[in-house]
Length: 359
Image (cartoon, rainbow, N blue to C red; front, side, top):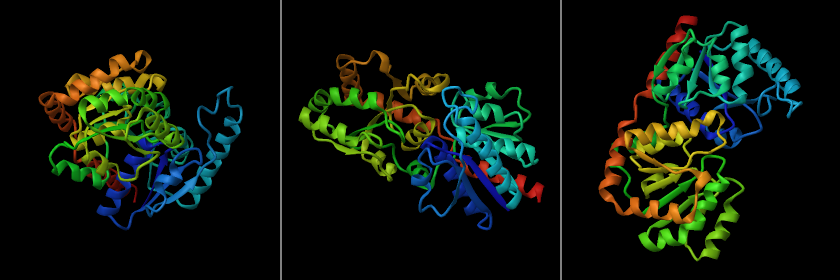
């Protein structure tokens, strides 16, 4: 029994795939699980040491038809050939598309070779690769119910399953909502330059008026700059480029300021951590803003627009929420209500059923 999980580049694509892989191994240790990714993301860094096989394809970022990246077309053709050779040599029972440019060639090749294709979609507005692949998929598992409309023409069965979470984050569900003494700032697996700058500019006032500790996961490549900004502002902060133990940072936090990537939102929900979300304005199809609105409407989070950001508006927003324990407690409760804790087992069992049918 063999499955290839195709996609990656960012934590938002890789994390649910890793959670599904963990659950498959737990339920059926004999299942062979591998990942298909690229060199142009965090695939090596995140999967290194996880015990999973990683095969790298040549696909580049963006569409193979992009005139701005003329090299994408031949690279995509090579990625199709690589996927064909791999699937012919090691015929999988199922291919799972995790989203992102690395999922396209394996997903298309699964269709050509009549291999069952499933999709894991994390956002309210599905990515373009998953939308393309949905026309050939047999099952679609989505974190948000709002994504259903985008797959209305797909022959696949749509499941509002939530997003699979790895065991350390599931453990947070058995603990009280996080009420540490820190303000956690994070911009996703690749960082967020403008978000980093907004918080650093307001940090002196926020810390001065709340007495909070400050933890900032600035993203790879931004750590030194943000550390220097805090030093110049006279603010003591723990700054990381990347942190491999996010669940522990959640335990130490009382409030998070972050982008609204879907997997981060699922983790905040598991932690019961109130959030001020700053959506990435340039996100494809504005999906981060729509992700954020899903939680804002339920009362679990606040949204703050980066394009109109200023210290005069951002600092008071953070200070006000930090000091309002009643509101934060209500937000934490609403966060927890968005969790679908059985997502991992549900998706894994569906995949195993497909494998059994194929066998």
